Length: 492
Image (cartoon, rainbow, N blue to C red):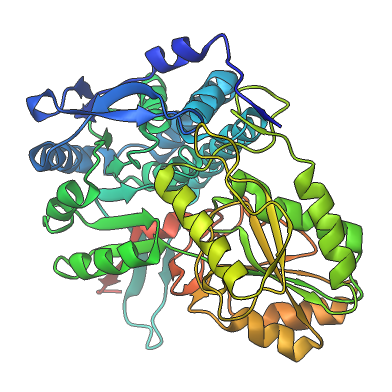
């Protein structure tokens, strides 16, 4: 069923969120007072207007970050960490309102939005603790003459670009290590979901972050405001989460200034179910890996490869679970599936399913748009999806599970690795040796072994091949914002 509930605090949380640019610690209008509309994807209605930055606004933000860099780099690490800790506590205290704001602009159901707020806050807590653990080395050279002193220093002003699908967690995952390392930054959130980032920036100001350390520019034309900053010598770091095609363009633009670059790009995650798997656990893992964030996640299971002996049972159980999900506007706790982000994404999912069906795939459940309002798509299970279907090589980014069979381990690994992407894989088996063997053979930066969620602030998140460069989170996350300096000491 489809429902269109409302929440009594909708107007309040939207009104409370900043709508301007944050530059040098001040909220200000965009040049010419330009704005763009933020849409509720469940209804298509406009929530509010937000400042639409110009290239000059962006360069002003970079200038503010550059001016604040020297002072911030020498700010005591403990205090940098304490700012993050205070921000963490404020986020947790305001979780319900922040979750509602996210649901309104992005569409994910309220319970899942609360989960993202908690997840986002954990990045601040993690990097608050890492701020005081930036180490170095002191060593005697092999010939005994002099000494080696190795230090870690902030790379400098960072440009951060975040996607719409996790509008707060993708921000804290970048802002947290930048602040901890001593880097100032300019962040550009996706134009579909700017309110969560603007609210987060206001929380950091409240937590005591000095002016100019974090600057926020919002715009419908990301290329127009990002390229001038990327090509400006004052920028020293770029961190981007988004599509592989955009990532390739950013690498080219970054080459001119030889920026330190970290990219979390597209995925095409395989989900392998072997014949000895715990079937109920595999279905539960499939629901997590597929339906988290309505399937709009780079880590979403995109290709299901199931052993032929259990494929029918797995498909039936998964279809039963998918068809029972409640679809609707996500502002009440009983909704399990919200809308896709916009009309373009709805059209893409519709086209991918139509293409698979035209090539012989069978619809077990779902397979079409849901309702007349908003951008809802019915949770869908397809079987017999041929290797030539577009969804076998393209990210679906929606609630669609395409199932294909395999008969042996070698075939399963070959199918899983037959993609330019390499972000995450999932596999279910009760055979420990097989689990480790297949995990090592999969060409991905992360593997979920008998579990459908891999993201954790304390673990290094990232991929290989066309899925990106570098890692976010864990002990490695702060390295992306640090440079190594070697001092050779003589006279000893």
